[in-house]
Image (cartoon, rainbow, N blue to C red; front, side):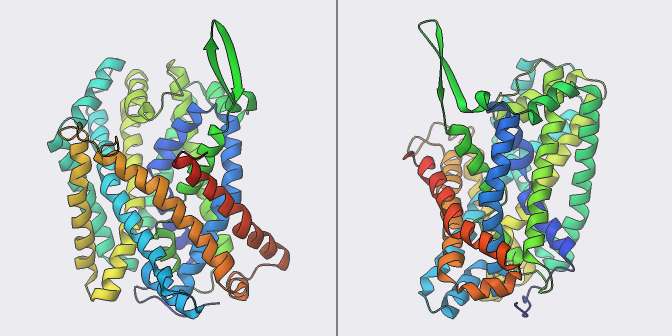
Length: 466
């Protein structure tokens, strides 16, 4: 088991690591994306498929990424360079660290803009904009926001400054303090939302939709042909669940690796990873419990896609007793979830600048954040002034989103599994994890065979091969 300590410091305890890693994993993907894809793919059956994918793909790769981080005790780039040297393999493996850092960097540049929407919506909801608003009026609010470069740039700047401030204060005073404050607040806000939704919404219908599986509904795609409904089997929900299970845990972007480098040596990697996966999954399910009862109570469509949060829910908040207060708190919750994720996205690059360029923490965070902010202007403009300018039939934002989610993240996770499962010596993983022989063999098999296969299928689906 590794005994060294990162120059950046380390977490005070396993609980702090779990809070930090959960904060990295919990973000817009849990509270925005998970509910709408669950709605699109039939509810309960999709949830079960998703949970299976979490266990077979997400958890094994998370354990491997934490293991690499704690063994290297440096930024992902230097960790992979050092571990490759120790294994006697090509130093080119450091590109895996570079890929993670660059991926997190690119994601943060547009993630900050989307998080800015949540800041705007919190203000709009608290101020009564959605009180009694129709679907058309709510749509106009969203349209006005994204068509205004000035508004988007203001909220993008505000969110990036919040992120840079936390990272600039370091591991103990910045990251640790932030997650120990923000994560409990996030949990309390989500609990309030769930309580309100179950009390004021269609609780039975919402919970039944979320937890009662109907595999015919999720794996059948029905179309009208000559007045007759024709249903065929579709693997699309499985591929979506597999992809989201991987991406929701922040794997393959260096965040979990660098957080693992701050983990104390006496903390069990496996138990910590299990706690993170459990917490991330529970929060996603609670988000569904907070949203679907309100959707059904107002006769809205659960499968309304990405607009579920920003264009469908505000209608419900505007119609229900106490809805404006609860709606405002919901968007504050969304901001906090995005904030805890964003600090993990900037941390790998900031750590590298501190280690290799001798920068101070505040300067490293400001440098990375400043470059991300400039790159984010492209995303701001892609919703308005640059909306007609496309490359490969995609706007600037769409291109970054596709490149990171469909190419860089799957490849990062795939090569993490390959390095730990096939390149690294088995006995090093055995000593680091300290599992029983049976549990280690099960993890080792899944990491070497099942997880890479699952990730490769995600990648092939993303590029249109399967």
